[in-house]
Length: 398
Image (tube, rainbow, N blue to C red):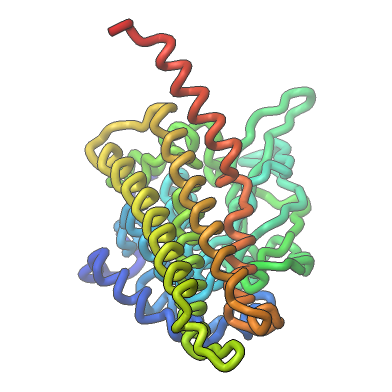
């Protein structure tokens, strides 16, 4: 299909530094809305509006539609700063930007369906391939029940995982694009952490999906989606899943930084048996060591992302060992950030365990973020170590 003009006039795009500053400026606002987001079990619409106004929704959107086409490193840097303000609200913005990048790898006509209609449309998704697509004239009839759709209450479109089933043939998994209005939301998001993400389940029944509104799984995993041919930039050649752990690690590190902020603010006000807790040398050690651990987690994750984007922006590809190393490093960053956060929570005193305490909420969000399967430390270390030894066995003796 012929290329079309952007749906809105192009503006001078913000720099990465601009986006980082805007994300940092939102931290106090997100912090003030955190309790309300958790109670409502969804991100406030005001926060979504703030993300749009700051240009964050369009951060990874292709330039042809007025987006900023930023790299994965910028997405992760912005997400870390937002989750430092509030884990749940920052999480949803990160997921929205992740899905915009993914849509940029779909066939161009699918991108036009979304962004020519609404240049600031947002997407939710559920990649677990629970959908069944049956071939019909011009496309597929798609049905399934899905979970963990972060930010679905604010979404305009959905990306769903599923298989094409034609008789005895089962092909996939692939990714299917459909309107959120064609789905039924299931209000089942009751969790101990990240409750404000509103990551509810949804169901679709016999929804028509045009044949061009599909991203084949093998193309996504190879970083070779049709959109990569029309949208310049290494971010659209990113193999699906290769740096996703780095995004989750960025959010987890941001939540640990936010917890440290809350711990410091709380500790300087605490008294224990008539003495200021902040004057206790043990508090000094805890603050210093936990801050160092969180800084180390941030540095390793950031360097991993930067190295990968350097390869992709230069036109290169990531090999299996590089992708597994990136996943391992991000999982280590998550584990390290969580361990530091656990130590902070365990030394915050009895008052911090009450529901509604900022320390308590921050820790529960951190715990939920670090529990995501994609940053499981044992699996990531095993896979990376196995690939390292496999390659070492094939190397020429020195």
